[in-house]
Structure formats: structure tokens, C-alpha cells
Length: 275
Image 1 (spheres, rainbow, N blue to C red):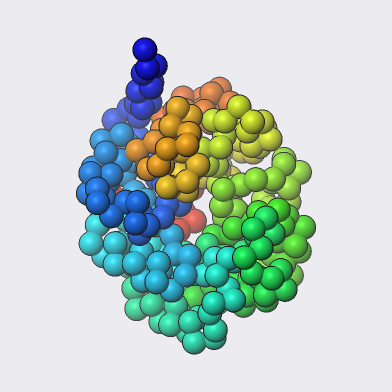
Image 2: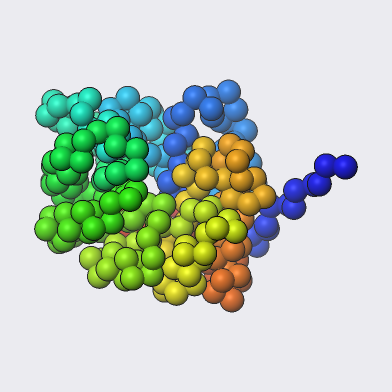
């Protein structure tokens, strides 16, 4: 007999979660997006930030945010794609962000990825520095992608700082020492569904030790679904599983985690969620 999956954890009325990082423009969502957003709200996720990873997806993210009041958008070029763009791309992204300030709340995801190396490290670092300056010009917080590149990411952030509008280390993958260094810069740590995995011990340590005032939550949908949906398409309605695990690690209620992380997202990205 097929084992039934446990129900999505309940968030008590008066509290809500924010999914700080999801890729809702991806094709795997196009046939049922309205249902996905409805499920998210039913399960206590009242706002979602949909993330730009290149010019096309940044434009799509903005259009989604215009259409759905519970969505906000970001713009930027992911390190995988930096060799496919030029200065005119960044100029158009700046114009897109400036023309849609009600909807665009952050710049990213940008950063370094040495695991895949779809772009040469030198190209990634050059674009990373350039886009950090664009974000500062736009007075937007930055969303940082860092995979197998902790030292270079930290060095570039230190060199490019300070960041008056702050930032977040998306889908955090470092240890507690790296988390402490990121917090010294003034950035938030974003916890994905990996925290629910059996092999997510390092992230569980980070989630347990980093002050709740420095944490935000994300799905990174459609990737990294939390247990019990690991390996399936992720979506914002699964975020309570991540919140529940963080609450367990910190010996808090899920509502305490929801309230503080949502407050953190609203502060970082400078917008207010209306329930």
C-alpha cells in the first residue's frame, strides 16, 4: 500500500509566511499557476517573490507581479547566463526595474556558481561585481546565488560593500562559520527545503544557531521540495514544511517562525503584505 504523505502544517490565523524565492515564470507552472497561488494562500503563504534569472525571466516575473497582487518580482542575471549578455542587457534590466518600482523589490539572483561552471569563473566574477553596483544604483537589496564558491563570493561582497539596501544569501549552503561572516556584512540567511533532508545536517545547524531575526524562508520552487515532497515539483504551499522544521530546531512555534521571517522579508524587500 502506498504510504500517504502527511498534511501540510497549519499556520494559525493571524500569522502568515512569505516565500522569498520562487521561479514562477518557469514552464512547469504555466498550466496551473492560479491553482498554485490559491493553494499557497490556503496554506498560509500570503506573498511570494518570483525571481529573475535573465532578461526574459525578469520581464516575465514583472508581468506576473503586475497580474497577481500577492506577487513581487526581482530582476537580474544568474551566473549560468552571464556570458550570454552584454552591457545593453543590464541597461534594459535597470530600465525594467526603474519603470516598475511598485513590483520590483530586489536585484538578483546574481552571484557565483562553480559547481556547474556554465560560464567561466572570471566572467562570473566580473558580472557579479557589475551587477552589485547596478543594485546599489537602483537602491535595491541583492539576492545572492553561491554554489561551491564561498570564498570568492564573500571576498567580492566585502570588496563591493557596504550595501545600504541589504541582501540575502539565497538557498544557503555553507556552514555556521560562513553564516556568521555573511551576517557580519548585514545580510540575511535564506533557508530552503533542504533543511528537512536527512543529509541537511549543516543547514539544520545553521537554522538552529542563526538568530531568527536573521533568517528568511524560501522554496526555490520548482526545485528542492521539502520532505515529504522531495523529488517532486516544489511550490509555495509546501513552505510550511520548511517553517515547521525551523520551528522544531529552534524549539519555537511555527507561528513564531512565520511572524518573524515574514517581518524580515518585508523589512529587507521594503514592502508590506496585506492579509
